[in-house]
Each structure stands twice: as structure tokens, then as C-alpha cells.
Image (cartoon, rainbow, N blue to C red; front, side, top):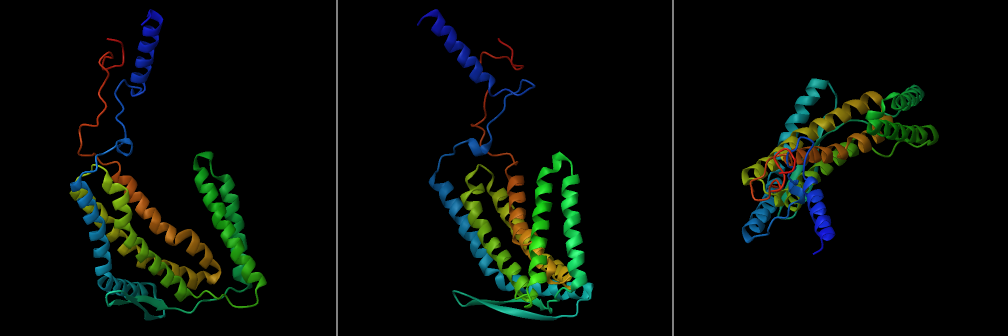
Length: 287
């Protein structure tokens, strides 16, 4: 090998070694999402049991969960002073598993001229606010404009259509609860395809699954009650905004938030750490 080729090879090796250095001279270990883990039979069985076991837990707990939601609706109705009867949507599942999905049978208020004007002014103020936000809050700008666009579409419907809004508040609440239950059932299955393949401790995986499911079980009926209260006070004009902007998307974001938190946990495997190159000192200088 010529001297030029040897020098070029040494230069390439040093550049590659510097790629894993931080600004302080430390070594940047690869994220666990970039580290390949061997698929052993034990890892496969544990992953399968966590996924199917979590899904079976959700399905088997549906009758008790419905009863818990019934209690939440009863107490929230008394707290908010909403005068509506508590009713149930019967749900039948395979295996003779059935339960009653609770909801408040509230009448859907239709917007009048005053509500349309208030909704229009509110949508305009939201658009103006989106332009006043600083550049560092750019995602919030687009979110506020999306909310305003949804509100304008709702305004256009009620301003043009002579027929009453076909989507009832009862249908809205049942859709929220049903969609929430679907998300809860998918949580252990999605975790089995994503988080459970990483080198986290088994108890952490179980704890995360239970934390997400518990959070959703408490959040969904409270979310439905907030929607009911808002619609009863702001009429059906706000239902599209509530459904598309603050409905099922919040359930998904809850899962994403827990998932991102869990990926920050320290893994169990120590063999995937990046070690400093032998020809570099701890501070990144040449030996």
C-alpha cells in the first residue's frame, strides 16, 4: 500500500471515529431504535404474550369498564347540572360478551343567528391569533388555522342548509366512546410491534401498557362529558371541531406521548454501547 493510500485510509478512519463524538468530546451512543436485537424464541414468546395478554385484558374488562364509565357519567352529570337521562348503547361481541355503553341522552341544540355570528367572529379571531404567534410556535399556527377551517365549514352548513343537523349529540358521544375502546384494544397490539421489541425490562413494558390503558379508561368518559357540556352551551355548531380536532386524535396523542416517554428509558443491554476509538483520547484529541 502506498503512502498516499495509507494516509487516505487513516484520514477516513479518523473522520468516521469523530462522527460519534459530541461537542464535549464524549461518545454518542446509538439510539435503541437504531440497534438491531437478536430475535430469540424467548423474546418472541414474551412479545406475543404481552400483546395477546394485553388485548385479552381489555376485552375481558369491557363490562367492568362500562360500569365505571356509568359511574363517571352519573357523577359528572350531577356536578355539571346537565338535565339529561343516562342511557345505554348495547354492544355485543363474539363469545357471548356484551355490555351497555353509557351516555347521556341530551337533545342536540341547533344554532340560531346569534350563534352563527359568534362562531364566525370566533373563527376570525383564531385565524388572526395564528398570525400573531411567534415563529417558534409554527405547529400551533397550522393547528389553529385547521380549527378555524373546520369551524367555517360548520358555519357554512348551518347557514345554507334548511334541514336540521343529522348528526346527534348522542351519536357523537357513542362514537367517541367506541373509538376510544378501539384505541384501547389496539394499544397492546401496537406496542407488541413497536416498543416491546426493544431491550426494556419486562416489568417496564407491563407497567407502560397498564399506564396507557388506565389513562385512556379515565380520560375517555371525561372527554365525552366535556364535549356534551360544550355542545349544550355552544350548540351543534362546535361538534365538527370537537370531533375532528379534539376527539379520537387526543386518544392517539396520549398513546404517542406515553410511547415517546418510554423510549427515553434506559435499556437492559450493555453490549451495544459505542466505545471511544483507541486512537482518540477521552476529549477527542489524538493520542
